[in-house]
Amino acid sequence: MTSPGPGHRVAGRYRLLSRIGGGGMGAVWLATDERLGRDVAVKQVVLPVGVSPEAAAQQHARTMREGRIAARVSHPHAIAVYDVVDDGGSPWLVMEHLPSRSLADVLSSAGVLPVQQVAQIGAQLADALTATHAAGIVHRDVKPGNVLVGQGGRLEGLVKITDFGISHATGDVRLTQTGMVTGTPAFLSPEVARGEEPGPASDVWSLGATLFTALEGDPPFGSSGNSLELLHRVAAGDADPPVRSGALTGPLQRMLAPDPTQRPEMSRVRDELARIAAGSDGDVTAVLDARTPLTTVPLPPARSATRTDVPVPPPRTTAPPRTNAQPPPSPQPRPVAQPRPAAAGPQVGARPTRRRRGPVVAAVVALVALLAAGGVWLGTRDSGGPTTADPAGSSTPAPAPDPTTDGAGQESTPTPTTEPTTAPTTEPPPTTEPDVVTADEVAAALASYYALLPEDPQTAYGLTGPQLQDAASRGNYTSFWRRFDDVVLGPVSATDGSLEATAQVTYVEDGEQLVEQHRFTLVEAPDGSLLVDLDVAV
Image (cartoon, rainbow, N blue to C red; front, top):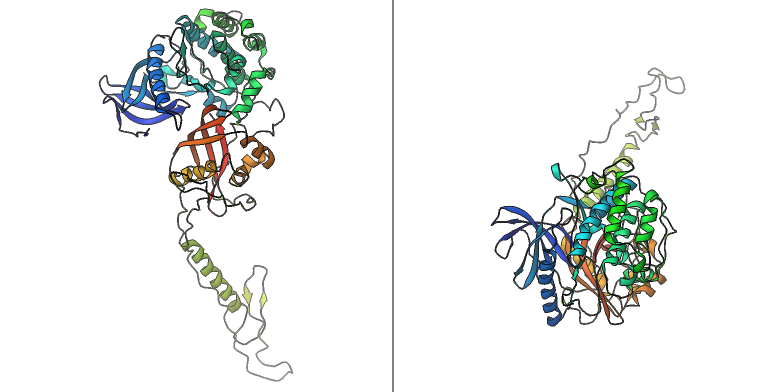
């Protein structure tokens, strides 16, 4: 499936402007509805890499079904779905566009939220999900990334839930691919993580996990980038207790009950959260219509010790910005990866080495040679006599003898002195702009890295940066990857000049597939090659 760019018209009507998001189910674009003259958000559904034609047909049918399901929901705190179209054999959803940022972005960049704001956001989301459940729909992917908070003018603080991309309507034919895990592991309820059928109580748990994250800074089961390991933790029900939730402690504990039959219905969740948000003298009804301009507080300290049994660091860790300052100490020399047999596409194995420009180095060498020659010249006098240096480092001629007598008291002709000479002024050498990393170089580095996995994790570990290596020892990293039967990297989305990228990654373990959208951060090694420093599911 090709990835269209800006200017492409979906179904001859929706002109793409810019990409504004994405996830495991596909990319989201800001577009213009040229027929109605309004901005919309359109989502292209991306199929897993290597999917069979039969599975592709099922996914297509499932997306068309999704459009019909989501169109049933009309609520002020839910993103509306306007249309579902087929463009070149690919399904696209056309949705309401809300200028906003996700709750996940807010928490990642600014910290956590106070209790009353979390209660208000929770009440509004619970109200939308109550309407969703009344329509016979289970959302199945409630998480901070699917909670939008409006920005600008009258939209400021407007909270809406989005992405019914893996919804399931009661009574509809199930079209989920066999063996495919859908949803974000950190926000899946324990019963769904165990493979049971999700229901409204699963959305209650996921909403509780979302609110827990807004208060604590991490989901109830942590934020390991190892999705399968996290699935096991979720299935076991071994959640971390809340410590900053205040008045929300009781409601959260009930929402996060391991047994779905012990969780309250979504309407009861809405009412209880609205009472907490309103306070003793507030209007409970007004809470559901209020705006929520977010006021964050500093991110709290980690609630538990750093885990060392996963191959990636926590999602909020970011690589340090590239500057002109001296780079940190370089890692040990990396082994050169060997290519996998019969690999398609670009050649893999050897790490791509970026070109280094020579004029700057040549100019520096020439300048050093010039200064060295100048130093010898400044260190001698024409007469061969010694020189002395003043504290500032300038050369001063030796004192001249008495003009009437020599050292023996005899009259003599004074020896002429040489005026001090300074080095000629040398213009600084011309500088050359450093190479800018290209999107192709980033994609090639990621392709080389993933081509080694899962068969050769020892070599792949040598292609990782310092942050990833700090998060996992070579032994833990190797044992993690050898659990999989196969790992496939999908098309990489990158931008010239940036060391960040996104791509879909498909894991296969014991015949089961897990498809994730990943965010990567790379760093440049001293030899110019690119190393994978962060690799996290989003």
